[in-house]
Image (cartoon, rainbow, N blue to C red; front, side, top):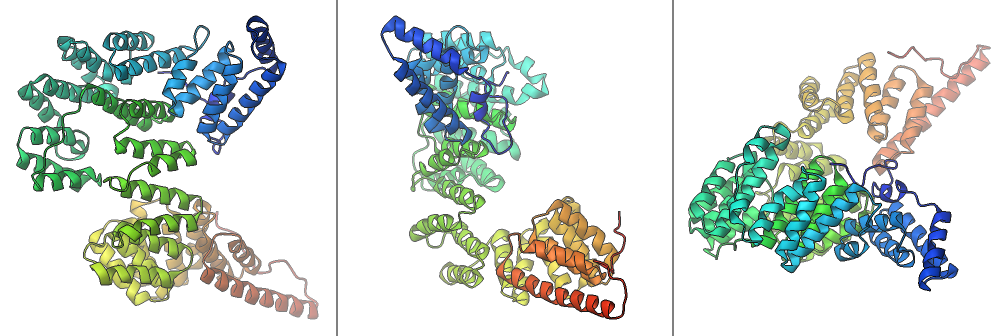
Amino acid sequence: MFNPFSGRVGSHMSALAAVLLALAIVPGAQAATAKKTAAATGGPSTTDYRGAYRNYLVGRFAMTQGDVATASLRMGAAVAYDPGNVDLRQKAFLVSILNGDIDQAADLGPGAGSTATSQLMVHMIGAIRAVRDGHGAVAEREIDAVLKTDGTERSAQMIKPYIQAMNGQWDKALDETGDTALQSSDSNRLMGYLIKLDRARLNELKGHPDVAEADYKTLYQPGAAAVIFGPDYANFLERQGRRDEARAIWTTISQSASDPSSQQALDRINAKAPPPPLPDLRQSIAQALFLSATLYFSGNDTEMALANVRLSLYLDPAPERARIFLGQIEEELKNNDAADAAWAAVAPDSPYYSEATLRRVWALRARDQLPDALNLVDQVLARQPDSLSFVVEKADILHAQDKDVDALAVLDGRIKRAGDADFTWQARFLQAMVYDSLNRWPDAEVAIKQAQTLAPDRPEVLNFLGYGWINQGQHVQEGMDLVRRALQLQPKSGAVIDSLGWGYYKLGNYDEALGFIEEAVQLDPSDAEVNDHLGDVYKAMGRNAEAGYEWSRVLTLKATGRELASVRQKIDANTAVMAADMHNKAANGQATAFNDGATTRKP
């Protein structure tokens, strides 16, 4: 379908800014409309118009900053002063949806003169509000209007059977005649499966467990499909009193994905607690909207994904998995405050709390707000001191701050309290990095070999061990073989290519080393260690000025204190050598050059 929020304005500007910028409002035209409205209604005066336009400008600016909440508030206020301005209403309407202000969006719904897509969203909101209020006939009329505008709109296709069931039209709700057409197209096949999943639930709601199970069985397959279709089938089996079969499915899911709901379900089954209740029609429509949002997101239609997850939470605000996803979408759109608010709304007693908080931490780290990230981690560790995920996260933040002694103390403290039998390859990898930063290579080697046992084909692990051997001058050829294996798995990794070049450097093959390390710099130009290595190669080849340039560049990049101290020593020594060389040549009456040792670069 046509994306109502299409048109991106630069990679660093929120994509939602296009909602405003794509539909320009001419100030003069707005002024004229405001004056006409004031004259006809005795409403806002010219002074009022200035206030309205000021609200519009603030809203527009807020959108460019990713502050959708402020934009929604201000655009709504602007419309109050100029209700007849269709373009303005359209902007305010769309922004309200994206901010989750569904009732405000309904009030602002643009009428004649708005785009077809805006009209589609007007009817979609009408349907969802009618569902919420229990007005089935209105909901069906509105969803039919959506499909009349766009017969392939996936959210409408998925929720219409539930609306038909609301109206007692079970024969239509359970009709399978459209399945064949959906299955015939690869692009629609997943939609067909999701509609079949909806039908399985509808049959269970209708009291047809045998028919429902036939559909669940058709959809459920161990493997990737288990994560999508397994939970509904497992919950059905629990409701049928078949706990052992449900346990087997949840076990398969837990082995395939890290969704915490699987462990929660296993704990519930093992405790013989009551099964999860069957979602009602309203909850089922909310879940269908959530699934539709995931489809839009996977198709890079981020704004429609956001609109659908907002509608889902409007109908049913309880599902925390939807809040996790809401935060992911907001983060993708650079709406940092909105993303954090979505994740912060997940309660501490929720099985999704750890994931939500980790995502908050990762977002802070991505913005280089390490003290704030560390504070958030410490808040969790105050309640769960042995949580491996947060222990590792704290140690990693400390490592990023060059506080490796403290990072190691965090890891060692956890081992003393709770052991390390549950250490993942990531925990061992971090442990190895900390040891290496503390110049404790033998300990780092032990840790990275433990990581390799847990994850033998991870390119990061292979590269770390291979580079470590190379850098230590031990097992250089074997180390290069490990790096080559990593490069097969990650052929565009600057770090891995640099490791291979460093191996050639250690073997004294500077020409080979130069080719690889120059390529690594092109791939990762901001990597301090790679630039440092390029300087070392230039120095070994007698290209002193170029070596000095590369080392000076390292000082402008994000590097550890140890790296910076080492590079400064190299620069000082290199400067002294170049000065002495120039002095000697001048004393001997020889012509000097900026870089007398320069050689032609390899193409």
